[in-house]
Length: 104
Image (cartoon, rainbow, N blue to C red; front, side):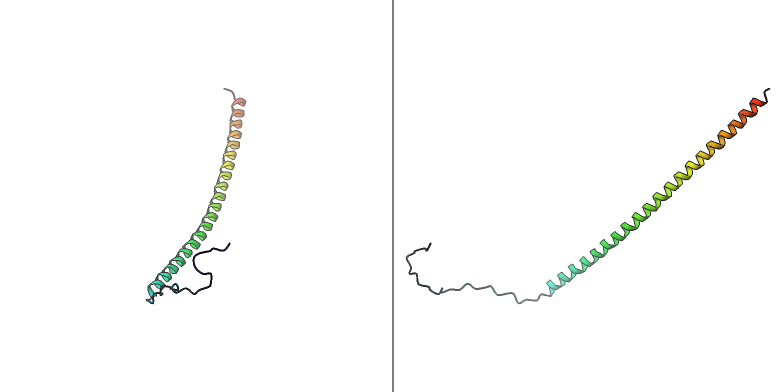
């Protein structure tokens, strides 16, 4: 639909064109300095994160090794207790056999 107004429909050139605000022509060294500081800080942060990843892997390996050591100690302790039980049983049997063979 075409809008009808009180003006004529002939194309006209606008009298006032929109203007763009001029860009500041100041010194951008402060902005560049801020960006460089942020970049340096990000580099340090990335380095710290990589270090934490490595430490985490190292701690995982240490925990795995510690778990294996604890398991080994538990198995060894069971063997010692089992051996002591068997030896105690043999000694008890021998004492019982000696007492029953030599009544008073």
